[in-house]
Structures are given as structure tokens and as C-alpha cells.
Length: 202
Image (cartoon, rainbow, N blue to C red; front, side, top):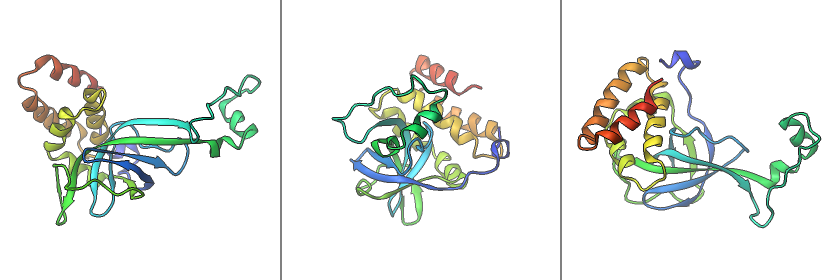
């Protein structure tokens, strides 16, 4: 698996803003509906940058008092629902939640929690292939993810390894190194290690 296998190295792009943050995680609202980065993606927020991994994506009503109603009984496609109900784009929003796995310190990316979380309204960007290679090269992000209290953390680790492999010229070599780091972190928990490794295999 290589970056070229996936249409070339991905570019960084701005996808939303921080709407809630704490020392270990933050939530971002997307600028466009259904435009959240995939599960396991590396993202960065603010300046100096705080780096994190997407662990949950949600699409929900902007107004919690107005629940979503089914509208497509007579529609032939999902796209037709939105064409016939253009107001839906303004009534719904996509958000994604991010666990923090590092930050920028004097120009270097370090895999430790930042002194402060990103500010509310800080811009959130997806990480470029070059950024992903630098971030994923440190085993510290694995340690932070494994020790986090996020739901299904092990599935997120597996998703992050798969996503990161697409940014490397030699994705298989990256996965081999990363899985060795993972084995070191979980040397005393073989069942958990094997469960994560099963999510990484193609």
C-alpha cells in the first residue's frame, strides 16, 4: 500500500473549527455537511498546532429540539431527498471528535499533551502526507491513544494505522514498524494486541 496507490499524497485542507476543547480532546464542526475526516485520520488545530486523531464522527440536527424526520418515502435516491428539501443543508451539521496525541513545540512535533488545548474557533485542518509521516513516526501517539478513555480506542488505533499507511511510500514497511511499536506497548496484554492487529490486516 503506497501513497501513489491512493491517487497521490494527500494535501492538507481546512475542514472546520473547534467548538469545544479540553486538555485531552476537542470537538470540531465541519464547514460542509458530511465533510468530516475519516475515523483514524490525523488532524491539527490552532497555532501552534495541536495534533489529534479523529475517533468519532456525528451528523445531527443543529437544533436539538428539532429531531430529524424521514422524508424519502417517495424519493428514488438519497440525493433526491436533499434536492426536494434544500433546507436540510442548513438544519443538519457534521461534527467530529478528536483525541489529542501531540503538539508543536518550537517548530518540532512532540507526542505529548499540550500545555493548553486549542482555542474555540481555532481552524482544524487535515494533515498532509508529510505531516502524517512525521507524526506516525513517533510511537508516543500510540501510547496516548491506548491510554485514552475514548470509546473503542483499539478500533481507532487500527483505523489510524491503516490511514497512516496510505501516506507512506512503503505502507507495508510502515505498518511493520508501527505494529512492532504496538507490540512493545502491549507486551503484557497479548489478547488486546492480537485484536488490534486483526483490524490492521487488509
